[in-house]
Length: 114
Image (tube, rainbow, N blue to C red):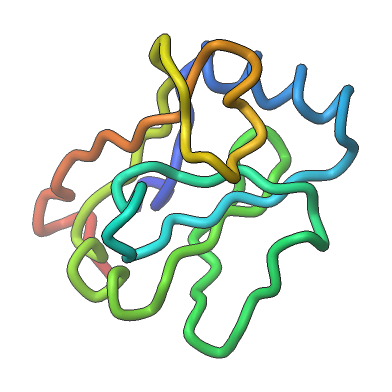
């Protein structure tokens, strides 16, 4: 089975740059109304994970989590974290870099789902 979350080369480069500035990071894909389709990047320890968060995998040696309810909708998809020009979520670290992380996805074929 393929990984649940992967990242483009551009996203990996931005993650590396952010780690150099901020140290260890964490990603969280929330199910909220504001920035709900944007993966949010935080310094590790600045975002408190709870029982409703599911570990999806790692991108750029950085853990990626998602709200359990949202994961139920997306569990049949592979998340592809990309970067596009623009401002990210107001709490996400990449905003001042002039780029934002963006979640793309593809549906797993039946033989790839767990």
